[in-house]
Length: 556
Image (cartoon, rainbow, N blue to C red; front, side):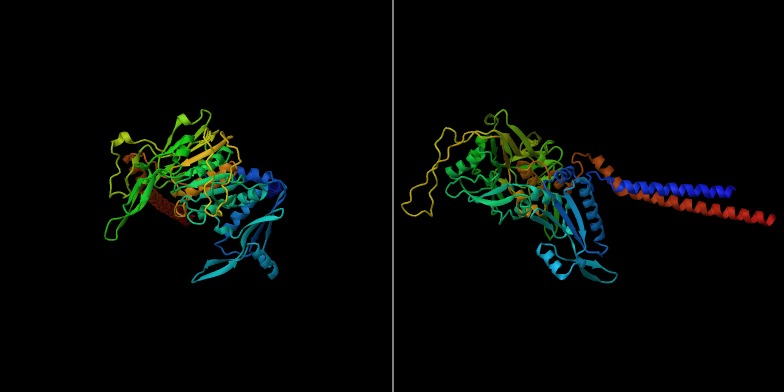
């Protein structure tokens, strides 16, 4: 009877367990949840993504084209994609639909149409037991909204997949795409030469174009933000006026440039007045004729020591701006940003007597307390070829402002002056009458923003290829000026920089070295010895018990 009772109780326990599993699966059909224990929630959908897909104006359809039999190397990517799309489905309204298709089952014509839309098979290297081989697979996404669509051809090659998906949806559903203009005609680099990588990434969300002022015509009203990046040639008074009036109409103005000229022959930075110094100074910001040298935290560069031997050394003229002291806590442009590198950056001076009391001043980036203003001429040789200690000693060291945003109402630099006439048009036929400007002069602006950064090299193609944080910062900045904060939290997720605290004492550093190099191996060794000892003890105990049983059997 006792045995039958035990069987009955076991059966009841099994039935209860099966019931719990069934109930959990039923609830799982309607409620979706996962535990994400990573510090910055790398595997959870960002709040901004949830808000965008939960408030769609019309139907958005996502199709994932994934080959049926993927090699083992790609299976984690497939699982990550499926998990991410499940997150979107759980957070979205009924207007978002998601579908999975195996293109291997499509006929040649359907596969050809798919390739014309931007999704084609990609060759993937397969590691076998004794040789390398390649297989063509599909692993792309198509996002369709009304008559428009965007594709992500191969999700494996995408570093931040959530950002790509959410930004694609946002661009498709946004009715008016902002336009970003890069000013040209004064020695600036262009979106084709110099800033091509940045322009390509900005085109994911904006219309991007070069803007030439010609003989001084008005900057188009369709330009939302004007970027002036390191001009090297003088501006005519008419061109200054065009920029001023753009700001007065409420356009966002971003000015990047330093107060030095790089002399590669002499390996020096020489004095050069910033071509727009008088204009931006009238708004309350001056770019100094110096370079910031940061002895506390800087980028490392290779230095030749002779005989083909090279070492990496900290280069104070490449300051690294880091959280939390270098960035403001409340700026969208630097939210969640860990590091920004500004090579050869000039410091900025705020002219408070020219800034209205109501203007909000956001100090976007500052160097460490162990930095100083290095006046021109500046020897560009890295350590140990020169000593970067400040001439006045430690009393010269202080944080240097290198990027600032002014938000508010601005007064025209041309208030009380006559409008400058159009510049002469070299292409005009002889005898052509000069153009007349019928536009009224605006003397005050609506609420708008002026951003000044003492450097433009940090967004050049060569810099962005090595410093991903720079691109994230500038994209965040442009987005905060044009779209708000919808994608900033997602974009910054891929750039994580957690250096050791530069203020650690030698004893603290030695302690960390001990734990990193000595303590962990020691703990593993102790664990192994203890396990070996306990295993031996267990073996001896079993042998003793066996011997006792045998002895007892003999006596019996």
